Length: 282
Length: 282
Image 1 (cartoon, chains in turn purple, cyan):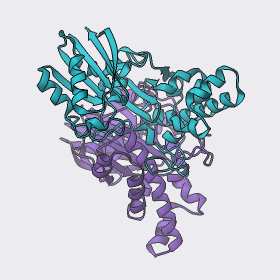
Image 2: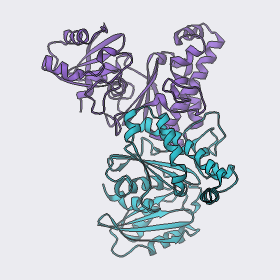
Image 3: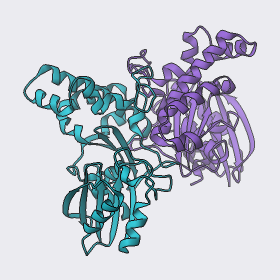
Image 4: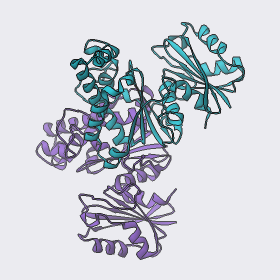
């Protein structure tokens, strides 16, 4: 089986060709601005041998999953039945799915969560995203919206979120947390690497909030593995200690607390594309 | 099929005899204080025709589900392999399960959640409990601890909980919420029924907190139906409005927000025993 996985982001598109479930090749292009250019660039990047295509997109999709709705970072594809168009124009069977679900599926099947029955994926970047994989399949929930970790309330009287609610995890664990402290995550990472105490403290605080959010997930969903991805996960070593401390404090089951595995993503930013290719797995 | 469901609580035991999935009979006894007396009273309440037995208990059980650990309200059964004992002494196949999981299963299969694929059950009483049923089966999580709603953090700098963490839902949505206001839920219910403004306001505040907790569950799990049970659910009409308002504010998916069904439990306090009987269903 030769499956092509495509992860379409706001600025770049990642391609991964899987042969019998293994990464044979991967490459990237920039994301064009118009729908037609985007469809053409996707088509031009499909290797001859491709048997199936999977596409990951920065959601939201409609409930059935066959229509891109209104992703703020991908206006070219608003209201576009992208998979159907690619399938019609190439003759190759094509599926599409929310990119965080793809990330979680990729990490669950061949990445950091390999072998686990229940995997929760969380991505930490400009926003906070989440996905759930149970028994090797994406758990989409009743209305296709499961895994919306970013808007979990962790302090109901906390700061207002972009969603207009208050005290959402995203206010504490996305890039916005660092911006409120005066810089991008990378700036504080560089400072921390140089031993800057303020930057180290900021990452400790970040870890605490992430631990609170993950403890909620563990209490409710009791996953076997949690995989942490997204740009901020590169600073894993700077927040892991406080994160784990908070989880120990807030998870109620002593068994879950002891055995849940929390891991950094293993697929090096390709989880989304790999998971997209694996949409055809089951 | 004639299944007997037994819901063992700290003060009383409920029995339900199901014939072909329908309640044929139900009755109650008091819970004896010693293990031997408890086993005997269970045995004396097994009708001749019983083919299978299911038992619900106020958790926790071990990971495999065949040993009662240390339920604070049921010391007689600490470290007791109850199902195995009943099975050995009666010759009738017996299973056991956490009572909130039984409640959710009962409501999901034949109660307020009938026909739904994903049901979340929540019980509001001396504590706050939760259970998850997916495709007609209890979802236990990787380590048997899924559904621990009571210890979800909704205000990380909130009051200390009995679990020694801070700002758990249980501090805001169990009986303890009312005790801190100076009385039992029933007292404020009676006052509210007489039009007492303070009591009405207390139930409004309660509804707000419950809505915050349920919004978190909807964002993460996206269930089709949420069933609310436990003693405090009797005051449903007093808190439903504020609860729904908060859910509208905090759920991110417009589809889930619109279609999720939130319902009062339908099995009249028998959900636990009915669900226990249905442990043999699949």
